[in-house]
Image (cartoon, rainbow, N blue to C red):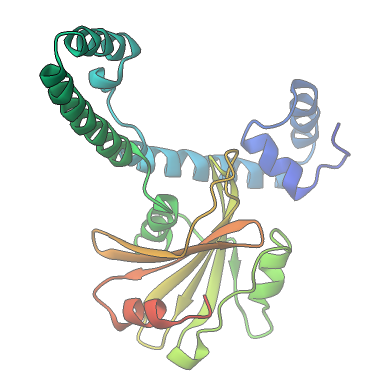
Length: 250
């Protein structure tokens, strides 16, 4: 049972429907009497809907009849009959089976979500299109690291990009299917933006190896550490993308 008033972690769990029915009800009663907190929770719920809608095309793949269990069993039976025919047929069946296995593996890889798709979509919605406003903006006495520590105090420190001319200017909390996330936007004097994205690895504890990938006009450098997944996202046609790829301390 959660304590009252609910913590930030409890509120994110409420948004992600990870609380028990009793705790969900307790939070609903609390929100009904705390309009300011309720407004923040509604904003998180809106963020979650935006991201899930934007990612639905990438994360939802059509059913593949070739992977239906009944179809697989039929293929196995047909192969077994061929195995009994002769040694020559056995050799052919083994070859076909190996090829089918490789094709099934390839189809599985294609249908799997690509790493940190949510980080790249968040960049589009916040840094490029400005659809989602910032929760926190750096002022003269602002502390972006302090703001991030309020929600992710065990995560890695914000990357220091001042040598490359980039400083953090704003932060946004998000709700994803993997759990609560945060995105910090950096900007240089020319107005070019890069982002730092952090979220938990999700219910399946999917940690990431150090990697890099492109998606349309964006480039992402991603990795895991201290129990979280991270990504640095930038437009792929700017010097920032190469700078992030070569910065080993990430």
